[in-house]
Length: 308
Length: 236
Image (tube, rainbow over all chains, first blue to last red; front, side, top):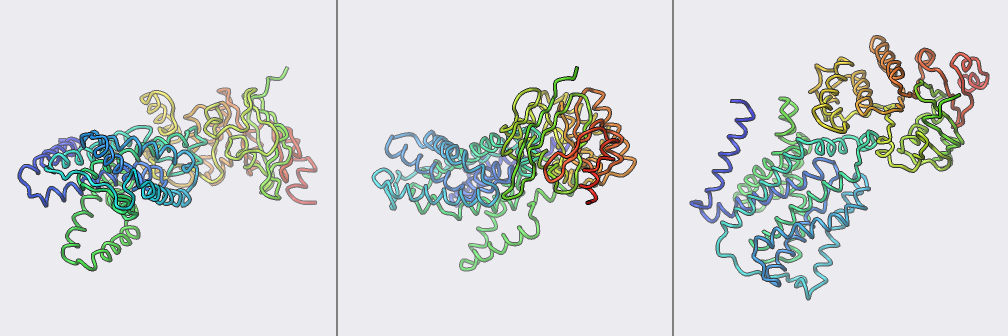
């Protein structure tokens, strides 16, 4: 059996295993895995722009929040079913990415990061301001959900879709070109690569999925409000998960989201008061010791293909 | 009758704050020849390269490639017209493999591109290192990789910024042979180089810059005895 077949077999077993979890697992476990799926999708989305091109987005939660409000509004005001309402979150998130990405992706390095941070604050302020439509600071309440299994599959499907898309990108010339932007943007330009356009494409893809995740989250949480769907901490968490697992890799965000979610849950349960300090220490450790992330290190040490 | 020039730089000016890096510089390159661009440090050679390739936007003047204006185009647009370049300080993509460094810039069907990439890697004896990260290669190897990365896009005009610097003698001879070979294929080459032996051996015409101005132009033998050139290099 080749390594490739082995990986495929492992993935099939993993997916099949996860698919039957809601049939017998407790509500706690299903809820926990929904969270993990959510983080996998978010960290994987962040990876598409920041892991590949090196343009660090500090405002990615804005796309999640916009998707959450879109889903909530379509469900409560337009009477949509939650599934299409959640998927529809992709459209305004991508539209926002287009409007903001066109000018801001010209900014280099820290300037782009700061501009994105500002974007999130602006969107949150706007959402709070248009009270009549969005419910202002108190937010929107949705009907309670009766069964979480469908959300489990929807969130899992989104995480799988992001991962599959990442695989398709990394094995294409488009993916190599995104990496070349991270490596040396001027050289890429001089070699005939239209970096402005490619960055924008990556940014749109990277924004669309958090929009969908946000839409599902609105239904799942039964409530959206500015504080719960635009927290900076959400962006930071996706960044850390992606870096921990390995930026610019396919399974890095999956691994990072999985391991850190479990870690956080264990630490939180045992050390309620210092868990954030422990988590913070872990972040510092990762950045200092393995800036490439787990998969990045393994890839380089064992010369693994990029498509892992 | 002379061929119509492939590249024409007319009265180009580039300033950085109070410094005029390129001052009303004009050059004309006929197709199928190797040209040299020399001058003391800070004389504007690399800035002129940057203006031609769109990395810097010139403040005044005109640049034409095959008759069409290219000043004001973005670097990738200039590249697509058929101008390739290397950099004085190596700019390979360090965390892409040697092979990926080539595949990332190819245009057209991937199978043909892969074959061509492997052919070029063999040509500079890097085929055994094709899956190594470019950042792990030696200085000379990275230089060669950057050189073939230009070739794989098949440009008509190639700008080389100090191709010989840091390359050992054996490799250098191969590199020089490769450059001559490009000329024989009908390519035009413009080389910035400090190594006068390289310039003398390869170039048919040499342009000399000093403080951003072109102070001399001619065959290398003549240039070497030009008073202004000697003054620019050694002082009065």
